[in-house]
Image (tube, rainbow, N blue to C red):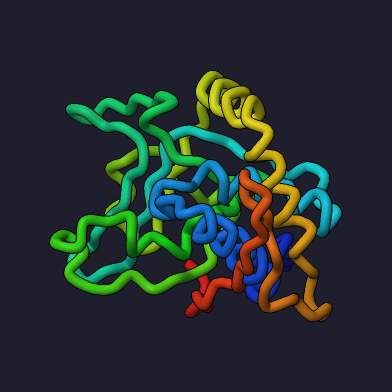
Length: 215
């Protein structure tokens, strides 16, 4: 009998990390559909700092997700031309790798990342936390419902992490996320005060997006 592998996060733990990061991005008026880098850098930091998962690290590359829609829609994040995969600092996706797991903290926003005309239906907000060993190896295999593909690029990851770290504001916002976050069952503050670049303190309220399961 095979031993069941325990995932790093429960659904409530993942949801809480997502909501904290989403809240800060909304307060910064960021385009959250294009914020996978911040989502997963901040998510990896919270996993390490607040949950004790020291091996969590953000990875950039190409990612693909079959969204289980009636028309078999797949979301591919990165650049594909004539079947060839290329990844750059302009065309990429970011996720977290932790031991045997792939975690994508931007996954609840897949609905905002797809072309509505192609989707034909709403993509529900769900947790993405899956075993890396179960990912498919080519774009052609994304036709299977629920299939997922991740192709890391160390070169692009290094470049993006370097650029991200050059802005002190990024580090400050990541720390705010971690300071606001509380692991369940501890109670979360529904709002916090965050100072902007002019020293004005604004109330930031916890995101209203709740998850509807897991991929």
